[in-house]
Length: 123
Image (cartoon, rainbow, N blue to C red; front, side, top):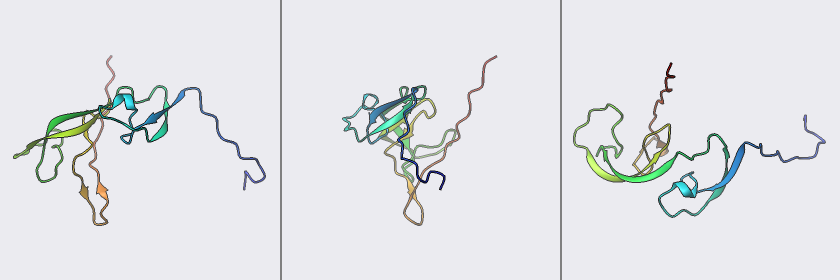
């Protein structure tokens, strides 16, 4: 109601926001280690663009019953070494992109949760 009678106006991109193509992974092509066909354009805050992010492939230990790596500090037997694709960024050291995930009763994927601790400032 407030905008009734006004002409539509496309908002302008702020000067500290950058635009660029991203792959299906959500990362820019230069940060992936695979061939990437840009799927769409994404806006990035200049200070927070994924410049310190990367996608790597390496062998990691996973639990055979879940297909996921053990949680930090978790003691688990019978781990299996498998080649997996990981997203690495300043917040998460290795999120497994192609690991199996559990599903709920509706068949939707249930993603694991991680608690990210804030860095303590040095005095």
